[in-house]
Image (cartoon, rainbow, N blue to C red; front, side, top):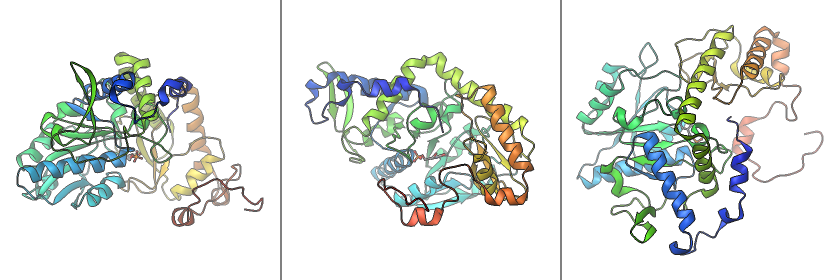
Length: 395
Ligand SMILES: Cc1ncc(COP(=O)(O)O)c(C=O)c1O
């Protein structure tokens, strides 16, 4: 989870930020100027030609991007039915492709954890609408053959979708558009600093190349001789969220980019990569693959990864994501981000060590020092409490 600077909260709390979105364009030129500038900054960062700010999360961005890909193929008279997704991809990639009406073709990873050229060739065909890829991938590995991968998909008539959840590894260093990606989303909570999509409200802007610009959601902010206007793109996929999307989250993204500037963003990604590699070196667990970009995946070995992470909670740290990606047994995936200092990384390494050396009894009782103990995750998913309720003391 990334550090959310208080500066961003201050900016989002400015009364002028909360004007009613139904005001006519001429009465909200300042707001539209910020939205337009953010569209342009994100396009520049991703190497895209145009950006919509409307989708409210990374997953919603994926869905929007795939609706755009579908509209593009249909306009060309092609009904392509398949989306290729690597087995290391985030679960939302599979779900978004299915929700957008595609069949999912799972792409097995190569021995080195990256895209396997032969497997890709076998997965592509006349039905391929798109390949979805994150780079660096969820193992923190950069796809070295990325240009040949995007060329192959284009040769098969498909589009290449960039899952931008890992873009903070590349900020100011490399751009998806230059690698041959046609459409992408930005996870602003991972790449910049805003509340997380899942814990929301989030934002998942989508960038496209010129060819896909006509399909962007409605409305889109454009600058004309008479100022900023809300326009309906010619072949729009329609609305994917009310008004401008989650405006205050977008305003925080704007403030973060503005505060850091180009050099600051490049420095943030360099530090995120350094932090991940430093931490991976400090912990005494099997860490397959590497060297890494902004995240790495260790294995809890013969321990249960979820228990391992629960034991880390007792040491006051945010534990790793567990049991995913499935390419690593009992996976512990850690993305320290640029915001951690050497001291906090060392504290995290100490928590890894404490869990690694804990006996079975400690592991199966953990966490013991948190307000909520062992949470029934299935019940939480099946019967969620969506509003705050006082708990009985015994619960
Ligand atoms: C690789 C990857 N893709 C997509 C997503 C989905 O993003 P969101 O949680 O904003 O829907 C995530 C979430 O963290 C992710 O890690």
